[in-house]
Length: 149
Image (cartoon, rainbow, N blue to C red):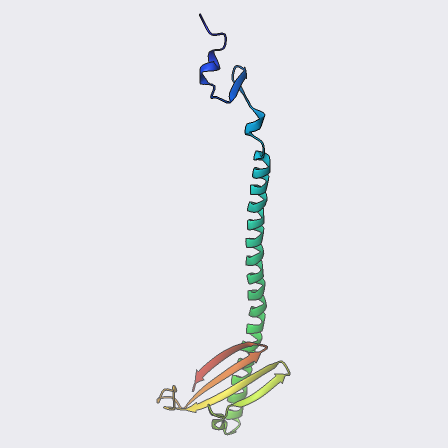
């Protein structure tokens, strides 16, 4: 005798064939699957959102620090220009030592510190007459410049 449903042998237990090619799953086997998939999707989206927020915060801090860094660098550059100008006018710039640096303010938030070393002194090469080190300070950011003459 021929079976009326040729697909019946391929059907697993718990599944019954409604029409050839279509499977019907018993209702008890899928309870909670939609809830589980929904929670999995929400958890994945939340993890992606939190990682993007963290990256954004680090980028914002970096960009903010970049502006502070530029101001501090230009403060150190201003100090270099001041020392070179004072030296060209004959002012004794060697009074700005490491133990007693010369300090100045561009405004209440922006300041600089100057140290002048003679050739052969500390890190200054002996073949140079002067080494000038300046540090520009803006808020908590410090940037330094060193030149030799």
